Image (tube, rainbow over all chains, first blue to last red; front, side, top):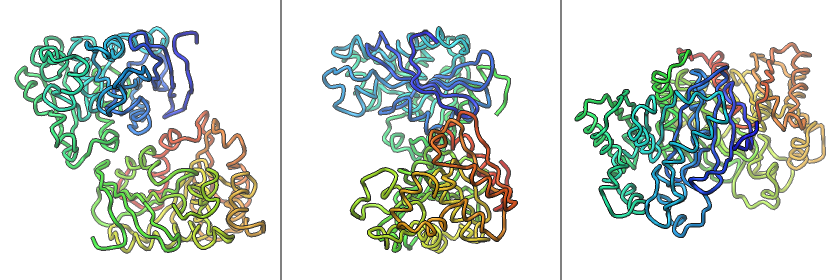
Length: 287
Length: 287
């Protein structure tokens, strides 16, 4: 297959296959790795983009989330992108675990030295999709959904809300739901966007939801009550619930007793999230 | 709970919980870590010991094997032990990845300097079980099965074959099936047992099967045809199949097209192995 992606390995999984890919990203100005799960189905399949959390790459959920088991049954492809550009050598990008490398926050940076390369929003929403859909005919570009975990839950929700009608559905595991009001979000938005807090609000799921107009498919969110980041008020799903109520959107936040922030939590509820996506993407199979 | 185990963390998973434990092992002369998955069921539950492969700890399959999903539904506890003693400081134990640390081979060493501490057979078959059953009342010591991957498949098969009637069933993922005839096994047995090849045969699944007398529950084995270690003749499942035929034992070796040796392989077929164990352990649930 001639194209922009190099397939570095192909791994059988649940009757389908995992393609470990690398490609050159213009918007991120570096080489990126991305994992693609193709279910065993023939013909076009819908696509779920799963966005990962702080410090993760596209490998963590691929190895520990077990989403392929359900995607195989329901005939859905899954894309697992990385969480930031890699190896750019920008001063400060490797100084902390919650900013810079592994912490791109799915926004396009406005502030130097990150402006011009920390463009994870454009990468996920545009470039990566264009390259994937032009190279892998099996992927149905008219049926895309989003999900994600923690910072990736923020990414999934905000990318959905910024593009009314583009994505069929969204769900999230323990998402950062109101970043302008939590330490992780404030640090990241100050670093990538600068001090103008009106700019921050454009990338905050709770704020975006209040102003959104477009199709409103039900949203599924799981949060563990034993999640230390939830307890530390980094996630603030209640704020998103309040915003949803105020605009009449069916956003179901399930507080799962004792579950933590790990992939043991994600894998436990993965079947529900894949089934949620399938409901809106349309598939011919059932879990 | 007063007892020999320290619970270092408790993690919710598929309605049950993972206990990460440490305890002092007398037969291994060191502190060991072990993971225990308890399903949500009330009352006594049967127990599956899952033995891991070279270089692994009890964490790999816990995180990547997804066995808890199925064990939760069928009401089976899973024990994930480590693969060798740790940190003994024995000369040579850290020189290679396939011998010494992470490579205990589930036998009791006869040769110095490993004699007296590399006793993974006695640890798994006796000491660990005694400690677990005396401390966790929920575990039913009369219903135990074995499974394992690669070196752990060798461990599961040989421990089953050395103890007729003790274990209800055994299954394996890509097991080292005839170690006396493969490089991994020859290196390990020479290092732990010495040069007497009659001694080696006592720890070889294929040889043990030929001489076994006792209950013969069906055995399930999966091997990927894309597994490089299978191709390199480290696993030799055909030899075990031949031995099974010669003694009339129902040993089903499924050659899974394209699957490799990784946890993507183990997780894909995990449901079948848990269901296999459940058939012999007796449970009230179905997958």
